[in-house]
Image (cartoon, rainbow, N blue to C red; front, side):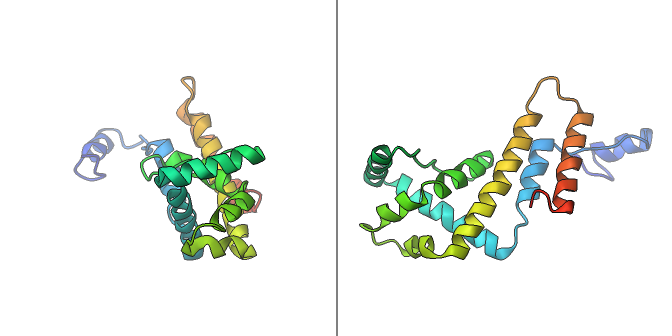
Length: 169
């Protein structure tokens, strides 16, 4: 429907060639987060498996909540692919109570519990948590009624510039 040659976009371009076209800004950030390198993608998938293992079973959820309540730590968020904006929150809430998650897995035979002993895996989890938290902050900045496309474009370009200079990543 919005094809660049025969769709809506193409028809607009034939009438007004100077018009620029932009994708939905929030959705473009989701697309930008998808092409992760394979090792980071694996850590991302494994971390969601850990969270889903704890949150999908009501007994595990209650036990982990009780463990976190005793230690004064926030509990995990259930991750769903539909709510991609919560990835940063899910990863942060998995990384911060990593010691409590490790204690929880002492009583449960789960294949991914050994990952919490690997420092490289934990570093990649922290890295992903930071990346998705920054993307979430950027997306929340877009959700303002007075936000114009020019400001959105500036924010996206500044984030890309920070990535290029190595400031953010």
